[in-house]
Length: 459
Image (spheres, rainbow, N blue to C red):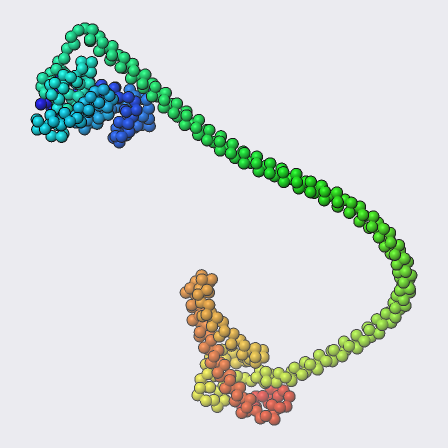
């Protein structure tokens, strides 16, 4: 038996391959290309489309791809699978026989497998037609059907019995080519018509949608028109009713206005008479006010003099109330520190305060302001330090210099420590001064000692 995988002499593979391509209808050729990713990529390279008008170019590209694979079995078998059903009569004849019980019996008698397709000489002669010679050559070359050598020779070397038959075959081939050309044109026209139908269908759908929208708008407008008409009638009736009511109210208002005008005219006459009487009283009161102003100026002068005397008395009273502050301002602190018999702790704090406040350089330094003011200055630094520590997260960011900020805090600790030492000393010193050196009788007397007495007392 001769299989299609054997090399057959006297037949042109490229010629039969091209014949299969040319005999495919456009729809079948389109499916053959689109179902093969590699062929689709080649045919659409450069932006081309798989279009019926491009069939010559597509055929040429498919043949070139087959040449590149040297007409491999996979390439040819795929095309044969698309071509075989096109020849309807031959396809149905062979497929019906191979699926029949007759062929199953023949296959069993000759011990053939289910993959073997063989025609006996009797069946071959019954199925073979000279008019389909090219189709049988394609079957011989590309189909899985196995032919005997005599059957292959008959297909390859078959000669028509007459010139009339050859002419008939040529005529049929010409008609077939013409029919294929018309079929391709018809397919292209059908594709265009389908595209036009699709476009028209889309337009129709849009028009129907617009029609539904317009109908909905029209119904809504009619409903609004009916509502507006009813509202217009209601408003017209209401306007007519209100017009009559307004006419009545206008007449009543005119009558009331006349009555009010008469009443106001009488009231105006009465008020004019009262005004004349008040004007006379005003002139009398004006003369009395002038006398009152004169008496008020004299009283103001006496009041200013009394206020000046009061302020002078208050200043003297204030000076007497600042006895302790004045007393402390008279003390020579540097000399006092060297003469006081202080405890070791007080002496250390006193010396520390003198050193921090530079008493060695300025022996005339005294407490500035009142005692509470001096004390408040010492406490302010402590409060500021605590606030810096409590708000350090915010102050670091706002200052923009974390190192500088903490250097300031470090310096503040030293200053606060000095102020604390000064306050400790001040508490002890004031206690010694006010309750040990001075007697209660002296403190009870609201007098200010002279400088000399203050120095002797300090010594």
